[in-house]
Image: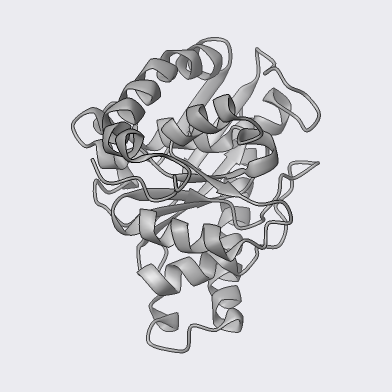
Length: 244
């Protein structure tokens, strides 16, 4: 199932048991997300067939709510993760929200969250993400923060550094409607909303491979990703306008 790559706070016994406890907690939590997003809200996943069942797979998405990564993870890997636990994705989580006390830290550690310090310029989190990605799958949000109006902003170079360092299969993912389900400032999800998860074709970033792993090159990779995310959002909005 792969060794935990971010839980430096755990003791030796907890670290040894983590693959089992994490798998159990993830699957015990799944019914809650199924209820919220596939029963109380209508979630449509487009492009699920494009997701490879391989390690070193990186999903890059726009960011609309605190729980985007759980919806994306379910949309991409649900059911298939039972036979391939390494498909349960790692994802960054704001330390001040998800690791604010011992109980929260234990729970979100089990859900494969990588704590990110306030300010988001956390190089340790970047390195942990790279180690986690090499042995599994990872979800990152290049914008670094949630959108307040649903629009897609400028990406930061951190995700590009991960790409240049790991050379993973990169899937651009666009979500739409999560800002209506759980907008900034709200703690409980709304119901009766429409959510889209659009998984695009793997990104060709071969033009950037072999060059310098600089911040400038990393930014160019991320800019290409963000262009794809914006294009996919336009597709979603057309579908939404047709009531699809």
